[in-house]
Image 1 (cartoon, helix red, strand yellow):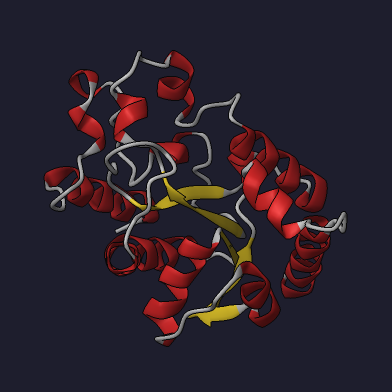
Image 2 (cartoon, one colour):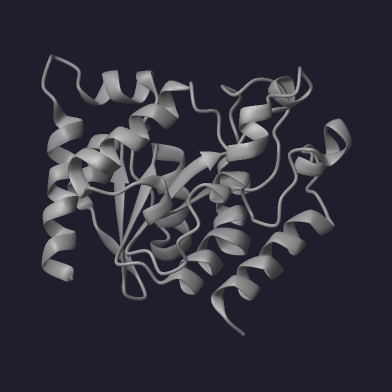
Length: 222
């Protein structure tokens, strides 16, 4: 079975049921946001031969999806005017000379959480998502490097693979990378404004330095 078919099977698994306390992507507006990927974000970042793979935490929330239909989000699989996405695109371009279409982007948690985008997802659910949806995508894509954005995303992968967790982004960046098969997994600050500002506290552009180190690593790995 080729990579696209394996990924399609994972998407169908995600569509076929939902965990208690959450909803599925297809539950909103007659399924307008539904897609044949684990995450709609992959619509715009679906290079199955990518050397770089990106995990964001989760795709959306109940509050957002119950609102008016966002046609650009439907078309692209992400909301282009959201800072998180603008910053991710800039970081990929500035440090790897890559576009979204050159990489593989997904969300680790595949279901829709209640409330707003700021709502917390319990560690147990993030770890379960890593086991059932995250690691299988890594095995299929087999990238050189994986960028885990945000502490929750990184810790879910780290706990699943190494039975450990880190206390903060700084600790995660310091120990990066760890490996799953031949893929190197890096912890990076979330690309939202809060994640960027927290990592760059004190006026030091640590985010840029962190991404430069990943780019150097990838260059050596190729």
